[in-house]
Length: 289
Image (cartoon, rainbow, N blue to C red; front, side):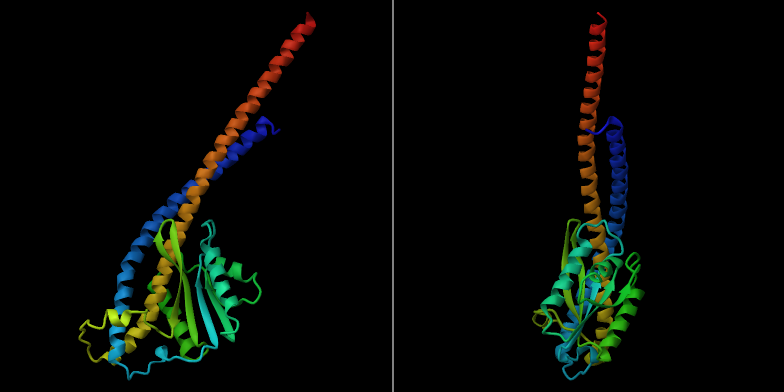
């Protein structure tokens, strides 16, 4: 049985850990509010852009834009959004496993599948798996998400696609639903495609385009890639903070339960020690008699 000193030391250690997890929960809660506001502000813009593109495509059928060009799918690129830090439950591992599963399930569909990873944790997970061809890793860009970073990424990916280095580019990220719910999402970033049903949904919307639908569509297609990446980064950031907040809350509760159990163990051990001392005193008194 552990000594009183050992149990007391362990209680203090767990209590210190509890203070850390509680503080991390509060920090994540503050960051989550800011990230959630950014996500909610960006979603309508991204959705409306999709609506306008869906309305433009039927009116500009003669357009031949590089980002709309379909090619035989032989080379694919996956842009995977993860975090740079852990202590957020299965946030990083789950999306990394999903991307790995997709790659292993499609060896016959693609001759080549490369991976560009945003976040240190995704890179650490995938580089230990065989057959994962990681070509680039972006670290420390999700802590402060800004549109300029998304625009640079979009330009880099668009250039790789138009130069025919890849025939299709997928984007993996976590969509924020609530503090306890993050949905792993995969979208086809390039070539640009409309979500199913968008044509019918916005077919009757009467927009006036200036100078003409074709020129407006060309500009929107490039902007759409930037917006999709920016939105994904914001969604991933909010999801990470929500997952970390939930994880730290659970850790704090577990620490509270552990402190209770250790305190009970300490009291029992202390009572046993007192009882033993009393028995020794009584035995000594009896021996003197």
